[in-house]
Length: 344
Image 1 (cartoon, rainbow, N blue to C red):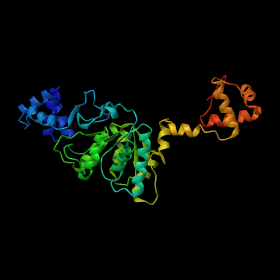
Image 2 (image 1 turned 180 degrees about the horizontal axis):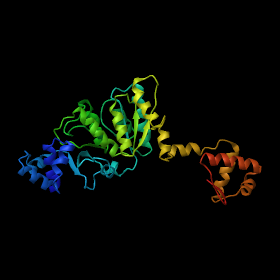
Image 3 (image 1 turned 120 degrees about the vertical axis):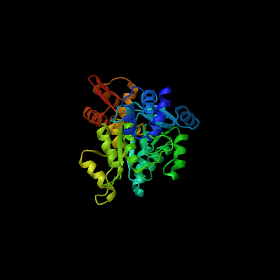
């Protein structure tokens, strides 16, 4: 608690600037020691106890990197935040190994927002947590798609959590919190979301995620900086392609040329992570011919490994038909082959 108290005072004095905070801490072995040293050097610092009391009166918490609830993935990125300010609950999202960042242009097309919404909804249904930046366009569509699937989403802000930016997304932010998600920032309350801070916060969006999905990234889009962070942090990078003549996809297509994985549906991402949904299992399990019906019925009745001879006897099908049908069922992932025979 003491370390948190002194860190908060230093973060306020440094306006949350990572480089300044790092410099202030460089010659000290604790935040309290750093505070004492800076005070002796005449650096103007706020009163730690008074400022921390103000923080406690808000609904904002401060987690330093050694804290148990600090996202573990975030600890291991280049230049991890020394501390993050949090509104809401990080526990569910931090514990989920399937957190995906979805980002793109603020000036998204209607199709781009729909695509983003659909991806976020389907991935949430498959067990993902969605991370984004609460901005206009793709970010908002990602959060909304996740929420429409009753999922948990995390928004990383470029300013203090005491003021939502953009202001028109206050209702969206409140819905994120009400549904069990979180708002986080490395900037203390009162800090404005200056332009350069949106690039800085993108490393955190990626830092808490396993991978990133880019939708509609023009050549100058901040989403390209997010993609660079994904590469730097060794995260998976997925990109939705678009019209070759559309300005909103020039950056996206450049990423694909550079090696990002092209995806056209949520199934492509699920396949990359070897995730099979219940809906897909059900679709695969549907018999497509009378022969498949007979063989699946026989395997269910046997409830054990069965060889071809056993299946021929039970189904009264010719051996060649049994073998051919089993091959199709194996390809579709319905039947498994072992050295002793076949099972569902």
